[in-house]
Amino acid sequence: MVRISSSLVLVVALVSAPCRAVWPNPKAMTTGSTFLQLSPSFTINLAVTSPPSDLTAAVARTKGFLATDKLERLVPGRGSADSAKITAAKQLARLTVSLASGSAVTSISSEAVKALGSRVEAYNLTVPADGSDATLKAQTSLGLLRGLTTFEQLWHTLGNATYTTSAPIAIQDAPAFPYRGFMLDTARNFFPVADIKRTLDAMSWVKMNVLHWHVVDSQSFPLVIPGFEELSTQGAYSPTKIYSVADVQDITSYAAARGIDVIVEIDSPGHMSVISKSHPTLMACVEATPWSNFAAEPPAGQLRMASDDAISFANAMFKAAASIVPSKYFSTGGDEVNSNCYTQDTVTQAALKSKNLTFEQALSNFVSGTHKSLATAGKTPVVWEEMVLDHTITLPNTTVVLVWQSSTNAAAVAKKGFQLVHAPSDFFYLDCGAGEWLGNDIGNSWCDPFKTWQKMYSFQPFQNLTTAQHSLVLGGQNLLWAEQSDASNLDSIAWPRSAASAEIFWTGANQPNGVPRNSTEALPRLHDIRFRMVQRGVKAIALQPEYCALQPSKCT
Image (cartoon, rainbow, N blue to C red; front, top):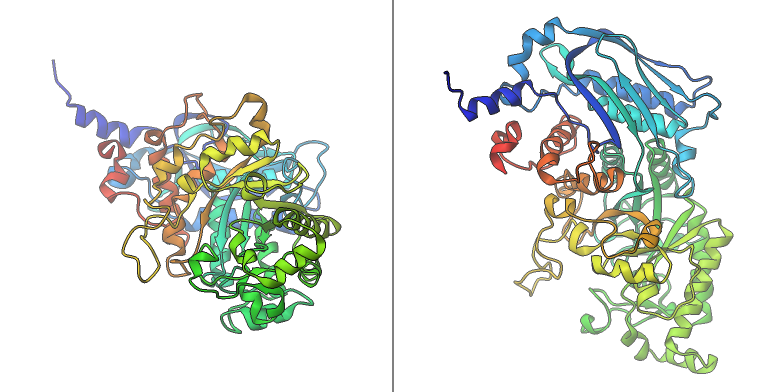
């Protein structure tokens, strides 16, 4: 009897096993083990009458990626051991892309900004092993976009050949949750439009569909709002560090064409110190010291939420800001409102006394006013969890609540009947782990340690929720607070870690074979999407030594 060592068996398995590199994992997928090449004359036939321009552009991007990705398989030898099989493989000449019979022809962009729950992203993709046409079908252009994204990930390169090891392939796919997001803070440090667009590209490659844009904060006000230009003129770091109305429209249209809705946040009434530069009489405790008595971080300063002038200003500002973005959602924030700031502000105390209001009543009136302004602009409000857990504010149950302080707080939000988005600092904060950023503190930051992709991937969206509450979970998001980030480290701090949450909220609890998600199965696929991102110009950080990327079972 001839003995074959286990290590040899492992190498053979890694070289010959069908490649499964799709991220996020589809809802249902079957694959074979037949090699199939893309024909040198491969084309995508868009069989849609009068296709919208953004769908035509999406097809063109897919054709471009198939030509330029040049990603070799992540196995020892990078697939060279299979060169004979690749050379002998049949060739796929065409992918036919079509809408299901009777489906309306609408743009990706219009579908991307529909209300959560009404966006149809499902698709069916088949790739036969015999070289006959592959087919992609969906009910919407948005679904076709998702299917094109998956199709791109099926292929690797060896020399001049673009091939898969896994034909035939059949995929039936749809997201488990309607909200799969990424939050970017552009107030602590400014991010140029080009860097935001690159982030949107990376988001689209892993089927994320919401950019939560925390565009302003106490430190700077880069957003130009029509009728309120003084806020950015005096509140931006410099005249070159602003987002003009044209910039906002550029970003939102670029995002929508990639299936992404942009939800803008103006955090109020706290986190607004910078407004004092242009409207000092509307503000309380401006840059008061010590700042820690008046704010979560410097500089201190909150809108005088009981003042009639401040209320009128806020209502008009939110209405104007909402008018420049297409999303049906707009966030008024509401976190970390500091009561001491108002207690020590004589103007606020006088207003409360004259109106016979408590602090909580005044806050409720302020929030209700801003939300009514958003309603007139056709927007549904989004708030941080404090608005429903820490304050006695009357909010309609259509309000979307972001759970951030702890993953365990989702149950309390759900108990109150609100729709929620998971954004917990103990799982999804990307900035944690860099230590404290304050100059006089040598310790860790409040949310350390670093949140690894494995930690993120372990998150369970329905933890501690009753079955009846499951429908309240809209999805979740990663978050990048930018105290220690700017364009220089955006890619490396966000990717590929953020892909972990993308899969959680697209795929759900189980893999296509019904087995629960686990990091061991996910690791080779995450390596693949990370390498593909790098090929496309996103500087995603390495997960492991390349030795491990080529044989991840040796590094578990």
